Image (cartoon, rainbow, N blue to C red; front, side, top):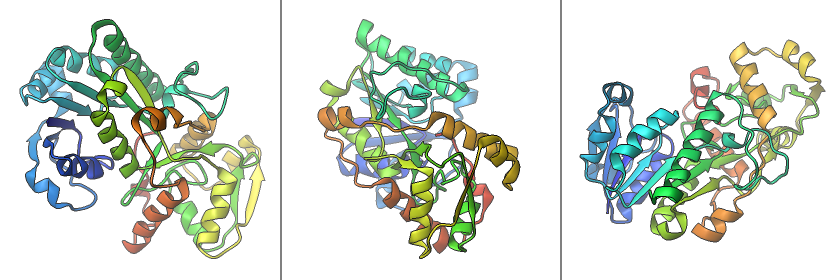
Length: 328
């Protein structure tokens, strides 16, 4: 099949595009052309690259039309962040594609009432990112059920892999905590360190997209969580990373308001920590396992350690620029 991937050179696309090529698909990647895959792979030599600025094309009302002109059987949208963006694309593709897959986020749930959280639990999204991702999902699945549009939504957790700083034991993307753990320095955690984060390796997300394409009869009209088998508490996470560096973790705990005034972090980092611990995701993958045969190769810690090894190898553990990325 001919598969058009929108935003295929990011962390997930680094693994997704080669998986698609190796599965025998003809792949078109649509991106601004400014980035490169995080890991090299010979599969990229057979990919058709289309350079396109999504924001500019959407402002002109031409983005959906240009995607349709690539004549895809399948479209995978990795970088949709607003309902209007999703609507413009779907209206241009309706009746023209066999399968449409959208990358969502576990942030659609907001805070959890029951854990592990399943796809059918009541949504309470908060924050612009989560609210928009939830609205996109509602729109796509409503189109699927009312009009037969073949949409599937996959919700990754905190994506991690080589070249990407994991959401840390401080529940943000500032890599400084890893250096402190490596140097056996004391780490101060908010509250009792029992809030949770839920990672997923980028290749496991790629695996899920390919499985959803292969099992589109079960996937169309559905959403699926795509995370590792289990979430981590901040305390357990810090202890595991310290042990990986050969130390026992030196931890101290402070109530939230005291913690935010005690740590050497900027307001962006503190805001990320609050966002992550307010969500404290602990997510079920039972549905993806049952219907798609999804089986993550990486635990949260294995994915984190691979990413940390890459950062150390490339001398970038303390580089704050690596901490940038989407909220989840």
